[in-house]
Image 1 (cartoon, rainbow, N blue to C red):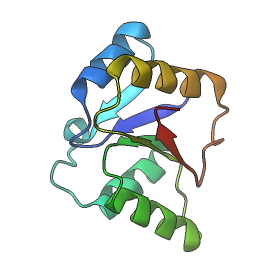
Image 2 (image 1 turned 180 degrees about the horizontal axis):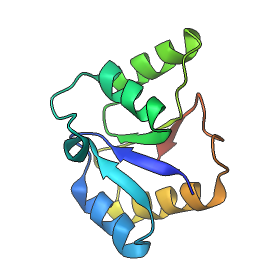
Image 3 (image 1 turned 180 degrees about the vertical axis):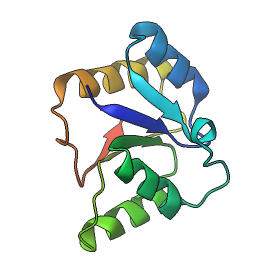
Image 4 (image 1 turned 90 degrees about the vertical axis):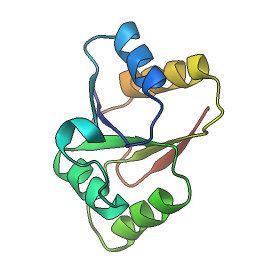
Length: 116
């Protein structure tokens, strides 16, 4: 199963909903791993080292730095960009579908936009 990292400002209702649906999901928050206040490049580097897909609402800068990593030939396990005002239930279902139906490293170098 894919491992996830929730960005600092990611909706915690979604995080809790994911864990309610499947307590075995491997998800940590930026705050849980000492990355609070760190810039996007640091968060993406940590996600890469830990092989975690980044969940974020930050379409502006995370997208830029994620693709920059790809252009430079660096690892980028994937990003799930979630619209801020997307329905929570739909987002939870979409994330569950992605992590349960994707092979490890299938999202390498990709950004997926949710809701699907």
